[in-house]
Image (cartoon, rainbow, N blue to C red; front, side):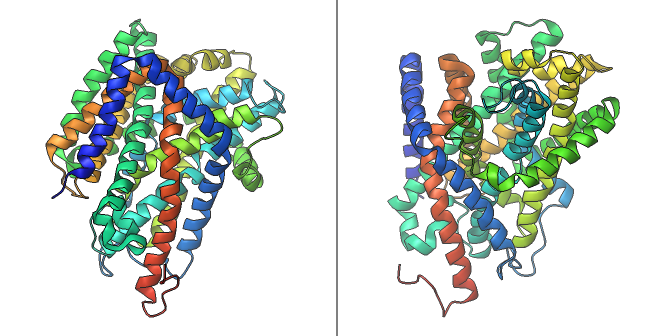
Length: 498
């Protein structure tokens, strides 16, 4: 079995690590140049691509292909709905919800695009509307495209569960040579930097929680220690496998997250939260198409670059990792069941989460508690300052710190497993040595980016890494549709001459 994907991917990542160790400033400068070029020239591409992915999976679900199973016709799902949704939630969101659940609505409230009046009722409504947009069905459509293609070609067409396998209708047997290898290498590159961004956010917020609770300094040394400790934890979990480590951790952090959500729902301004949920859902639906295509070329373009385009790049960079993992846990479901489950259930949970945490934070702000200033100055600590205004706030801060660690472990654990698969020709049981190598690489790059440029460096790198993979995903849609057409109408192949 060839290890070309593993060695070339590792060489590419090692070159980045070497540059970071030798000259962090130069690495940050190079990333900054690439970032500004991409933002200036390709922001529209991210917007169009993500909307296209959403339209594609919805059409697929309600087309004649919707009843096709991701597996054999008589196959049953491997996991119950509860386990499936818990693993979706943990792998696909995790740290991001804790980091941005309070900080993002407050940031949009106080620093919206220039055409919106800051610190007003208008900016509060805008903030919640865009949180729903950034974390709703658009992002999950990105994951759904990737997971559907992998699940279909691996479970239905019995090909290796790798991203290159999804290109068989276009490339044929060349997926096993360099054209296929390059696709998998691009997926590894996107996955590494997409996950590293989340790990960086998580380490920063764990540090902020420890500082808030116990006075532990918020500095680079502490963050590096946190990354080192959590690395040991997620490598131990990864070695134990999906059916043990990842599933157990996913259920545990799903329950902890549900506890935190119920705490805010019942001890916070419950009626206000539900009003925010209903109102924001209405604005989200009403402005759906407008938001999907809004790059703000006349006013607010910088805001769109820093938020919407960053988010779409982040979702795309996470797509190989989450797609492979979601495909792995979705065997036996129909395409229609899969699309509706992946798009709707996590999105509704996210909407409720942002209504509870973001809505309560905005309620505090509008009541005269200036929590928005904290969120804009130091986003990682905003959640813990928010808890100070509730009964049992210290206990909730401590539980949230545990939840952050578990989400950190689950995300890194899942990513390590997926990177092992990607670089082992889709082996569902990748060698432990590869999982350890990729786990160490993730942690080292997260540390390097934080040392080089902090939060800004993490955001820039994920946008850079996502661009080439965006083109891969667009071609992926074509290949999935063509593969389904081949199965259902083998004598009427359209585009068969390509």
